[in-house]
Image 1 (spheres, rainbow over the protein chains, first blue to last red):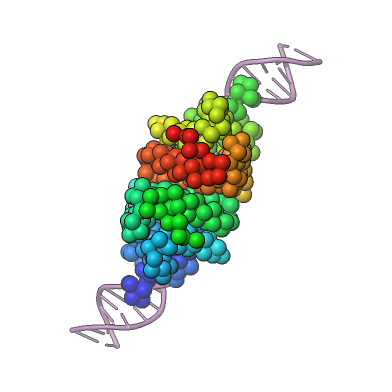
Image 2 (tube, each protein chain N blue to C red):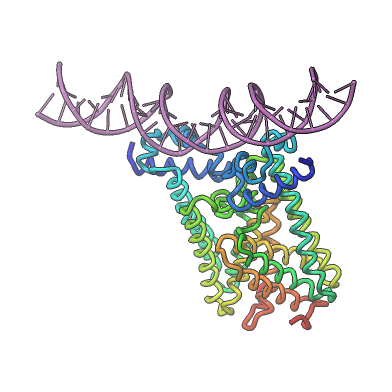
Length: 191
Length: 191
DNA sequence: TAACGTAGAGAACGCACGTTCTCACGTCAA
DNA sequence: TTGACGTGAGAACGTGCGTTCTCTACGTTA
């Protein structure tokens, strides 16, 4: 079996299991069984579980931000792109296997014990925040708004995870629109 | 040794260890050593680790909300009480042992495996949300504001935990004030 | 064909930890 | 005084899991 293929299969299984059941609840044996990649191969690709977790978070980060950007960029008007972020969150929260933000959950689980995981979580959140900052800048809005939108999005994610409901996305979107409207250069035009 | 005393000592140690290192990283032996309560006694008081975790979260919830309320109620003006929530968050985030929200972390760690923990987390978040709703109602502000403030607070907590910085509290406070100001009946008077 | 390297399956190892058991000791009632 | 009982210290047990090792089978090459 090709190494590249084995790696992808291992990460597919790891992502499904780690996200769905938590990292510590899933043994390497379960990853082996679910992926069809032998233990020997797994340990060649990822010398320790830590590094499999790291790779899972890293690949998920790329995909997650890719999906978000794809959705947002369907809107041409920079002012519409900001609420579109929360629309996408709502879609995400509604997915059948949604179980909260993978990074927030991983931080809760491993933040105190794994430096690798902490680094991944910080990098992901920084990237998301910077993406929002880009949207805010493109819309000609004040920089300070980015951090506020970021906090709303984070609050919505953590709340959706805990309650199992998608409604926090709409709440956050409402708050985001209020903040936009109350802003110099802000958007009374946005629905 | 009195049972009540043993229980408190066990919970003191459990809280310090579970919060600081994560629940799964702390064995019952460590709780025994840190608390001075024998294993036999521990298992009499809490028949399984699950239930010790549950009791830890429950007692912390009472204390956490008590401290918050105590701080908030120093302000008599209902409109000042809302930003005071975020002031208190900032104080909390600045404490030396702060390591994020215990409930969010516990959810990330055990949400997929322990019903008891999930119930505690939901109860705590519901109580916090309702506390905010009370503040909003007392200030004569629209009900919808409560959910938005809640999301800001949650976002601030999770962000402070991940970044290790207290600044998200000030950001959330700024956003909260903007939302207050943009609101009918809202408070252009609040600093 | 024969020797060799590689990969997969899964057994084995070592350790950590939740939980229970043992045993010696102190306490209190009869 | 004695005997039943509760307690503390910690050993012991069982299990799960991260990691490594063994063995077998197969494909490749001289």
